[in-house]
Length: 120
Image (cartoon, rainbow, N blue to C red; front, top):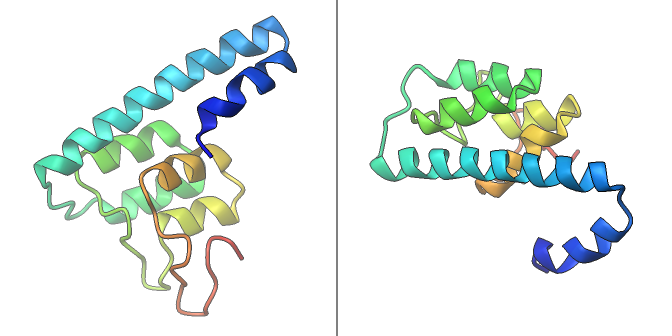
């Protein structure tokens, strides 16, 4: 189901300030997604950015994560243990980063070398 269908229901349960804040964050989030999509469509190689992306995702730095992806970092790049950005963010409870990566279609089923996924 599309998120917009739920928006009126959710906003009725929110304070006016929460509505304003959530709309502002949604606009910022959309700009980050658009910037990332543009760079990915240009076909950047992403070399040398993988470790920075994994660290930014683990630290919960959504802006840095989006910036690195816009510069061509590999969404599914993994470290020596097989962990991807979405695994790092999920394990550390960094919901905003996880949401961004899911929106960009990160694979939630990819497992590290021990068989653990972002969902686990």
